[in-house]
Image (tube, rainbow, N blue to C red; front, side):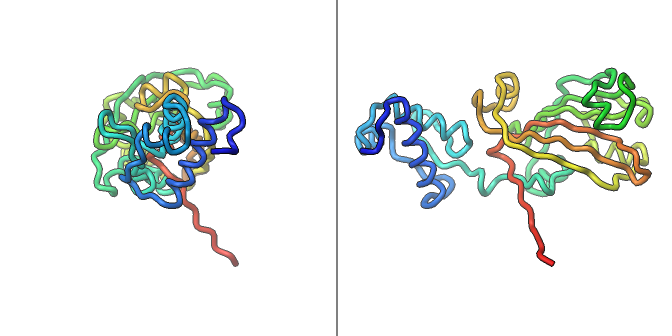
Length: 242
């Protein structure tokens, strides 16, 4: 650890070293050395070691079990593929998990500037705002708002969105066929309110997802804005060269 010159960067440098060790030489479930062992090995205080481990936990690379130690997380093997996850319910079932939906709030709002632009409707147009927490096997995974034009989906109820996937509602309940979905994904960090609902640390790594779905008639019928746990999702793409 001779290269660690500045006290306030010691935990960052230790975090980087452990991160590389995890990625190159460890498997999910492997135990990291104890705080005492890391402290003695690198000549660092226990406080510095704890800060480094907290960073790894916030990034979703490790899980810390009280009284047992710190272990490499299973996110690499157990992560759902966002590229395949148009229907959260279907994707979780395909992974052998039991999906759950909790309606945080449900109501009709006037389309804001962002929502009206995404859906291609006039500012102030009535739209449903469905705020849901999605879980699998009782583990919170995805939190987000879905916005749908009221005129396209009249009489939609909170009970319906709580018990059926949005995909089933759109195509099965209202006869709208989805032709395409444009999705943007970027890295972010969890705000305190989102972190509490997702069961992660404040400032933990998340994926911010925005998606607009278009029907076969060319109408934009759903806009979603979601936060996904970075330790539970991955995004995989395959490129084919002509």
